[in-house]
Image (tube, rainbow, N blue to C red; front, top):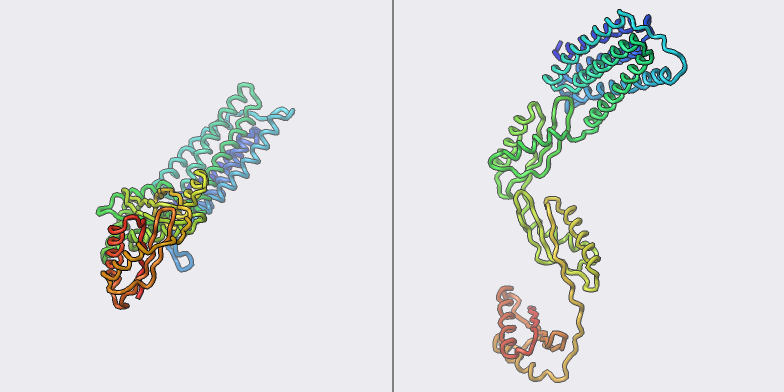
Length: 450
C-alpha cells in the first residue's frame, strides 16, 4: 500500500475511535457539545473513507479513457467531504440554537469522564492533524490537505467543547450549547472554503501561484523566448501547462524545437512533475501586423481614411500607432468615441498588440471644381512640355479652377511594355517642368496608361 493511502487509512481508524469515545461520554452526560463532536467525527469517518478511495483512484496512471490521469478524483472526494461537513454543521447549529433560545434548561452533566474523553480527543486531533498536514505537503495531495484542514477544525471544536464543559461545572449550563454552536460555525467556514477550492480545480480555474512560477521560469530562459500564450490547470498534485511560443519567421525547425525544449525544462524545474505541451509558431512580421491593424481600423464606421500605420516593439510588447481621418463635422467627443472603437477593434483583431495610439485628423470636405473660360495660355505650355518629354501629344488635358487653385489633369499614353518605374519617372518630370514654368498651377495630376 502506498504512503498516501496508508495515511488515509490511519484517519479512518482514528475517526472510528473518536466516534465511540465521544458517544460513550456524550450520551450519559447529555453534552450537546460532545454529541455534536461525535456527529462531526461521523463525517470525518465518511470523509476519510472517501479520501482513502479517492487517493487510490488518483494515483492510477493515465489510460485510454483518462488521458490526463485520474488526479481529479482527489478533488471530487474533497468536494463530497465539504458537502457532508456543510450538512452536518447545519444540523448541529439548529440543535444548539434551539437549546440556547428555548426555555428548557439544559440537562448536561460535566462529569470527570466527559472531561477526560475530550482531553484525549484533543490529543488525537492534534496528532492526526500534524500527520495529515505533513503527508499532504510531502505528496502535494489535495485530498490529504482537505483532511488536515478538517482535523484542524476538529481540534478547535474540541477545545471549545472542553471550555464549555468547564463552564458548565462552574454553573453556566448553556455554555455546552454555545460550544456546540461554535463547532457548527467552524465547520461551516471550513466546508465553504474546502468546496470553493476544489470547485475551482474541477472547473479548471488557472492556479495563480503555479502560473506565476511558470511565467517567471520562462522569463529567465536564455536566450529569451517570446510567449504567445500560457494556459494552466491542475489535477491533484500535477500541473498541466499549454504554452505557445513564437520564433522568427526565418528560424529553422531545429531552432524552434530547441526553444521548446528550453521552455519544457524550465517549467519542469519550476513545477516538478508537471505536464508541459509547447507549440511553436513563426512570429508575424511587422508588415502583416500593419496590414491587419489597417484593415481592422477601416472596418469601423465613420473612419474615412487610415494612414501612417506604425508598428513599434517596446520592451516585450508591441504598440501600433496610426492616423485616422474622420468627418470634419464631428464633435471632439464623437471623434474620441470613434477612436476608442478603433483601438478596441484593433486589440480584438490583432491580439499580439499591447497598445494602440490614434491621431485624429478631419477629412477635407469635397471642393467644387469649375472649368476656366480661357485656358489657351496654360494649355500651350503643357502641350509643349509633354511633346518635348514624350514626343507625342497627351491623350487628354483639362484644367479645373478649385478652392486650392488651378489644377491640371493630364493623361499620357505610353508603350505597354514600359516599366512602371519609367512611367512614374516621366510623369514626375512633366509635373516638375509644369510647376517650374507655370507656378500659378497649384497641382498637376498625371495619369499614365498603355
